[in-house]
Length: 306
Image 1 (tube, rainbow, N blue to C red):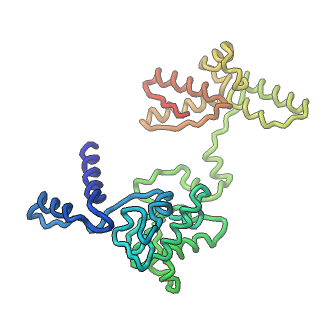
Image 2: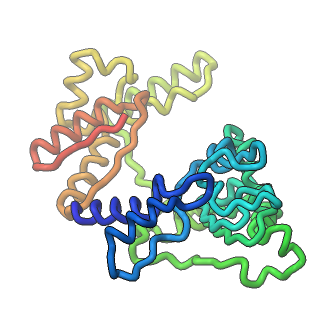
Image 3: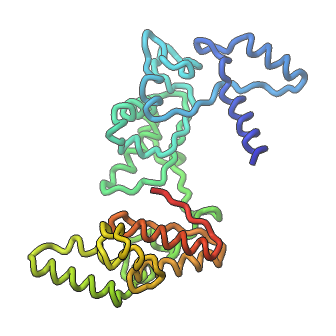
């Protein structure tokens, strides 16, 4: 890991070429220093610097053209005053490219500028990567493809402008069931995803009592879900007697949490990790305490992310 970090740091330092350019032209002192430090290698330094920009900079102040030249020093490299587009003559790689046609409201102005720059840039290469082409309006993917093609290629066919890598590699996380992220939730998929746990004893009695009370008072059952994880309302967890019952190890007070604990122990046996998400209003503190006690007993760690 240390060697990898050093390698990445060296590559970044080489490609960024900091302090190598002035007003768009490479400094003579930089070239002299490079060839002095690498005599006889025959390896030429990069022809242009590499930079990573956020949306706010790429379509904002860094690319803004003032008094005939871009504000950002990187955009001055190879800038054509007759074109006035800071992206002309550039190689641009953009991740999450769908933001050009479906901009976030917080960056709408910057993304609109960036889209105009990209569409009208000449003598340039633009690579847009996205995995979010799905949209209620079918014209959105078409709009993104038109941005990639640019105004200079609008009359051409789509051939050569679009590449789809729909097959996932070996490093992509496995899904179980396999179709859960690629289609609608059918009853068959739901049956494989959902573990149903029967309430019993104290938890069942309290659930039925609360359901009857809400019905009698003419109130909705919105809060009834708070009693599906524990036999008491989450605000009562601080009561010593309630806390003692919940963490006592008996499943009759929190049957769903104990079902989760069984799955956690199974993951530990298989040397796997698992993520448990519980709302603070439905027993977060209790689930955390039960997991930590099980971890102390069986020898696994529990991390908390609130």
